[in-house]
Image (cartoon, rainbow, N blue to C red; front, side, top):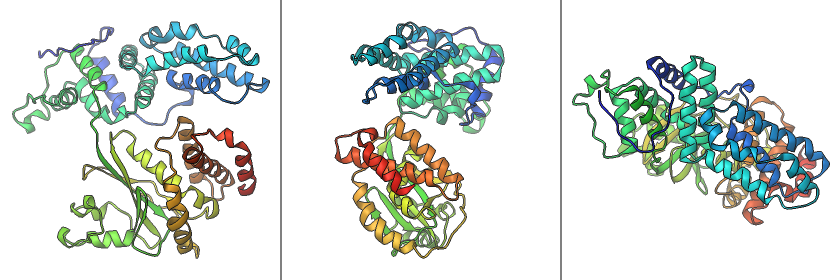
Length: 453
C-alpha cells in the first residue's frame, strides 16, 4: 500500500472500512437543513454569551435570563461535543462562571477577563488545532454506526470552517472519494496541500475507477490535511436575476453591481462570440452555453456582482447579500417589485464554475417599474453603494437570512419592511458614523419602524 507522510498527525481512534464508508455517505448526502433537535454547534453556542458580554448597553435585570440561557447553551454544546474538542477548550470554558459575570455586570464592573476567557476558547475552536479536533471527533462518531451522530459532528465541523472563512462542504465530494480510496480524488486532495503534486495515474480513463492504495489511517490523515490547506484566491463574478423589475436602458451601473436588461443579454448571446455586444462583460461573451444559463423576460433584470479577488467560499451568498442590501430601501416603498430570484451563475477568473437554476417568481405587471429604476437605481441606489460595509457582522448575516425567509413567505410583509428599515440604518451607520451598532441609533430605528410598519 502507498504510504502518506504528513506533519501534525491527529490522534484518532482505530477505524475500519465500514467507518470510512459511513462518513463518505454522510458527506455525499449532506444537507444545509440542520435538525433543531440536534442543538447548537459549540462555536455558535459560544458566540451568544460573547455577544451579550460585549454588548455596549448597560446590563439590567431583564438580561439575566438571556445571559443564563446563553451560558446553558454552551454547557449543553460542550457536553455534546466529541472528546477532542471538549479536551481542547473544556477546561477554559469551565473557568467561566456566568453568575460571577452577572454580578460584575450588576456592579458596573469591567467584564474584560470574562470576554477574554470566552474569546480565547473561541480562537482555539477555529484554529488549525480546533479544526483537526473536530475532524477527529467526526471520525470517532462514525465508529458507532449511527448516521445522526456523524451528521451532528459534521455540522460542528462545517460551522468551525465557516468561521474560518471557508465552505468545507465544497470539498465533500473529494473527501468522500479519498475515504473510499479513489485515485483521482486522492490526487485532487493532495494537490490542495501541495500544488506541485503529480498524479499517480498514467491513464485518466483507467484512473476513474482505480484504487489509490492508501491505508485506512492515511486516508483519514489526508482528509485532515486537506481541510487545513489554504484556499486559492481568484477574481469572482456572480450573476443574479431580479424579477418584477425594469429600467430605461439596457445597462445601468451601481458601483460593483451592474444591471442588464435580460432580453438584451440573451439576444446578444444568441450571436457568434465575435458578433456579440461589446457592452457585455467578457466572461459571458466568450462561452457558447451562456444563453441557456440566464432567465429572460420583459420584467426581468440580470445583476452582475463583481466580488473582486477572494476565495470561492460563500461567494454566492455574499453577492446575494450585497444586491439585497442595495435594493433594501426600494423594497420599503415597492414591496411587490424588485424581487431577487433564486439561482446564480458564478465565474472564477473568467470561467464558469458554478450554476444553480433560476426559479421564476409570480410576475406582477406594475406601472411603477420604470419609476423605481429612475428614482432608485440612478440616484439613491448609487449613493448607497459607496456606503455599504466591506464585511457584515454575524448578527447582520442572521438578520438578512431572516429577511430573505420572510420576503419569500409573505405576500404582504410589514415585518420585512421593518427589518429592511433597520438594515438600511445599520449600513448607513457603518458607512458614516464610525461603525456604530444598531442600538446606538435606536431612536432612529424606532422612528423608521413606526413610519414603515
